[in-house]
Length: 114
Length: 114
Image 1 (cartoon, helix red, strand yellow):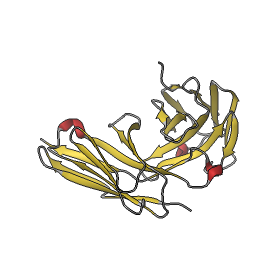
Image 2 (cartoon, helix red, strand yellow):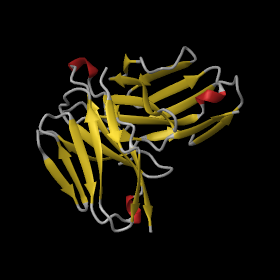
Image 3 (cartoon, helix red, strand yellow):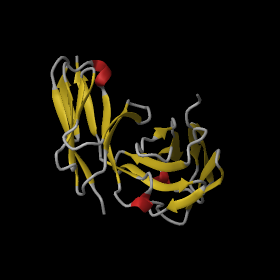
C-alpha cells in the first residue's frame, strides 16, 4: 500500500537557524499537504501543493513539491520558538474510491533551542 | 464557525469498561475520519465515512472497536471492552468532497485505560 515517510524524525534547531524536513511517498501523489501539530494540540492544515515542482511560501516557511510528485520538502528559515511542533506531510490515495482519504507521514518533531 | 467538536476531552477508565467517544464535524462537511495517535505508531487512520456511510474500516484494530455515524452531524467511536493498550489520543477530522482534500481536526480525546 501507499507509504509516506518523513525524515528526520526529530530536528533540534538553534533559534535563528534554518532547517529542512523531507517527505517521500512510495507512489505518485495528486497533491501533498502539510500539517503542524503543536505540543498537546491537534494537527492543523498549513498548505497544499498540487503542481509538479510547485513552490509556495508562508512567511518563513517554504514548501516544495517534487517534479515527479513523489516527494516534498518544508524549509524553515530563522527558526523561532513558535515553530516548535510536529510537522506532518500527507497525500491522498490516487484511487478514486479512496475519496478524501489521506496517508500521513510519521512527522518531524521540531525542538528549538533558545 | 465552530470547528470539529469532540467529547470528552479526557477520559480515564478501567480495563474492561466500555468507552464512547463523540464527534461533531464541521457543518456541511461530508467526510468524517477517526484517527488514533500514539508515540509508537504515530497518526493512524481507523475508519472514515462519506455521507454517513463507512467507506474504509481497515484501520480498526479489532472487533472491540466500532464506529457509527447516524447522521451528518454526529459520530461515535466505541471501544468495548477497553484495554490499557488502547490508551492514546483519538482525533476526529472532517473534510469537504472537493479537490483540496484538506482535513480539519478536532481537539482530540485523550484516553487512558488503567
